[in-house]
Length: 100
Image (cartoon, rainbow, N blue to C red; front, top):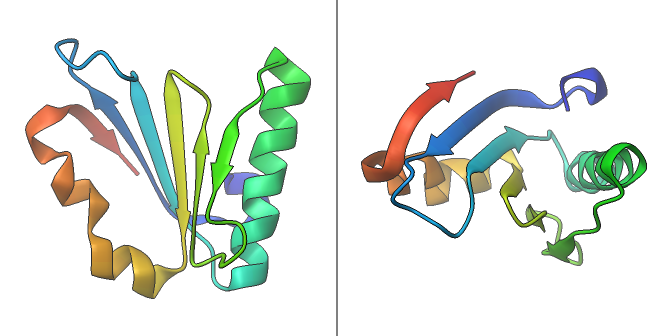
């Protein structure tokens, strides 16, 4: 995502007691167009490297796109939407590591 000009990239590794997934990646794109482009690049990159398909939600509106790869969840937001939902705070109780 960094190569495609995503900003404020955060990685959340959830603790082992949470079994739904292992990691959350959160990033911001400056516009709806960039949010969609970032989501498509991540989707294509993961599919190309690991042959893993994902479930995609939110692409129609493009304020917030969620990519579900099973063990990794990727959220790509417009900055104002990310600020509104403050998803990092939602996971605070499950965190073992955050980096930007």
